[in-house]
Length: 286
Image (cartoon, rainbow, N blue to C red; front, side):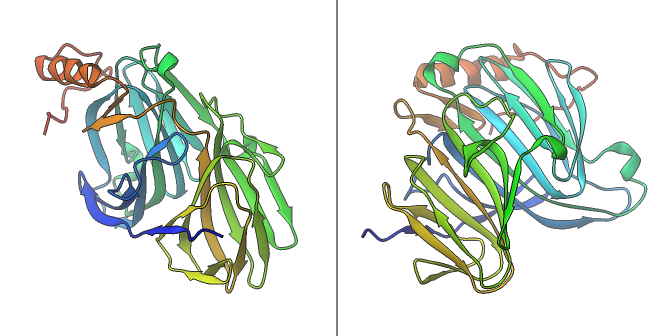
């Protein structure tokens, strides 16, 4: 039996929002289609302030935002303008060029607000890297849930545990929120080739080995694993089919061909990029 790889995330800040980022890391560049994993830490914003991720570009990936607390306003260069609440999915496929904004809704700014959630990036298959952009919003009630013997599984995207999410993923994907009552067990099957788990809170053991909260654990391929909750716990299971070749990542751009990234950088720097309606501020190239 192989030993799981454990990755401790690095602490960063995105436009003032504190995050933990375990993926990508030097130890692991991707898990299935997932190439980027941000845990937006619980943050209390005072009145007059909120999260404000200004206009910025993407290529070659899909972003998925899922909140545990709070709300955000998503706007993009396709003309989408969507309020996203806790428990809902905000899904955006970049294709060859998209820009978007994510911020605390304006009507929440006069009072204090709280934000806590996850944002992940999934690399697009090569056939979709230069395709059209897409945005879709999925209410909490549309996400399938299995609740059995003290273990609740909500399929955020993809499929697994006999559940299928409506989110339009582009390759075989697993992205599930798992909530376990104390003294419960879950077997993690081998239905996806690559799998990882991220513990949000609680005390969890994997094959009798304790897992620290906010740890990313890469599960050995082809092996069933057993999760045991020593206390009430919440975690994310994610993965899927391996990528169809290596990916390069530079700033907000993901591509199989480095030339696509250089073209995207040049276009953004020159202002030759689709813009978000009503937005003038933007994040410049680092």
